[in-house]
Length: 132
Image (tube, rainbow, N blue to C red; front, side, top):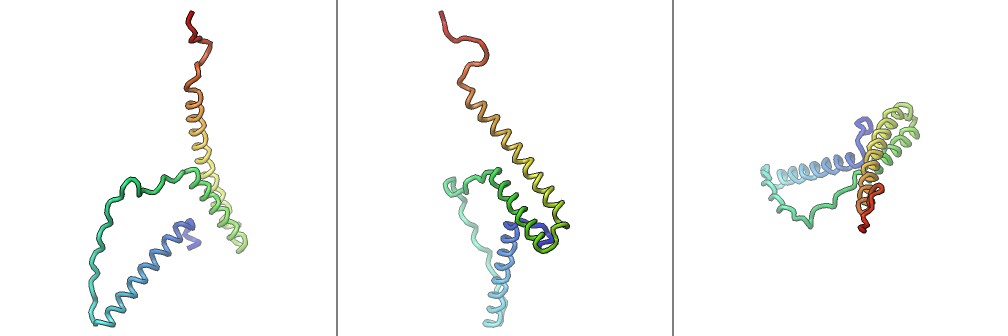
């Protein structure tokens, strides 16, 4: 797992899938022992289409990046505690710098949008809107 360089979210998701598959296989084998036959599973019904109210709120990319940077820092700290910091330091610091660059781009875009919104109602230059 550590060598695959998965994020903690990806690791949890993978482990959940493996556990579910193991549970399904366990139930199948129990059924074979109980009945002597391999029961073919019927495909599960597809869930009803999601409505707009049920949709998950849009996750802020900036917040995602902050969390990813924190995960990378924690990973590096763990590797250093295990004496493997030298091996992973360059890779992790590169990943962190890429995430920081993306965060800067998002910040610049947001700042530009805020400037446009706040200056929208104000006249620009020396032009006067007053009429004689």
